[in-house]
Image (cartoon, rainbow, N blue to C red; front, side, top):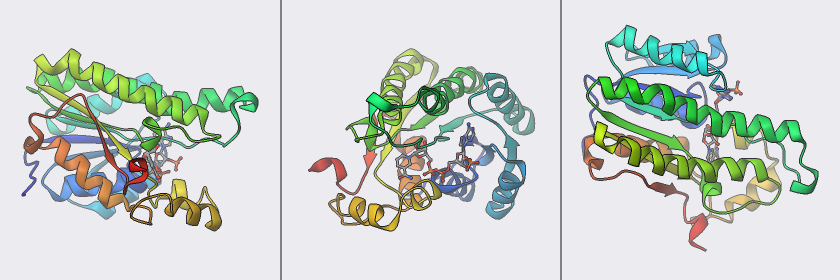
Length: 248
Ligand code: NAP
């Protein structure tokens, strides 16, 4: 199956690292004009340079609606329109039982992982509509389907994001916009590799039926498929790429 995105513009948030970087790379290599959005200018520019294919960098904190609006305006001004949006930026947050979960940690995780996705939808949808339609993928998690002890804020945000995805799909099917969510299992990225010690990573690997964690490129493949015309009858659903984590 040849996935091509020629003449399409795509935004990927949280694109300077991990899964977002792999998605941005795969889209650019398949012909898309890609705008990488992330927090740090140097890191984002370095990622865009490493990808090549004319990929652009734009500093964006997804918790700031004015910055997300500016990101969409930048993509439109630079390339003439917006067709594809990947709301990927996310943080893990600290692990703590809900009865002791720090309020500021709760608000931070919800702000990035849920409000950030809402802002991405809120500003990208009108732009994609005015370009004649397109597709959006929101990066949820297996923890948008099942719970995980100590990760209450993350689990709540990732479950909410699935509902948001379904509603956006219903609201905008008539505008020619498909909206789906992707739920990765544990993936080797800085979020996991630097956030968890070796023993925790080994234990988590064993909870996937395939006996290992995934690679960012394995998530990017599914995201690219959902963004492509090959997925023209798929909208409003969450698609797992989890090595069998939730099958057991
Ligand atoms: P990552 O390697 O840490 O990359 C996330 C990127 O997002 C980083 O560059 C980070 O910048 C950036 N970011 C953080 N807050 C942001 C904000 N407010 N605005 C814009 N960018 C922001 O993480 P990842 O593992 O690739 O995760 C990407 C997505 O996949 C997240 O939504 C995550 O929840 C989801 N996910 C990951 C896994 C996994 O196992 N890795 C599993 C399921 C779902 P800084 O580094 O400067 O903070």
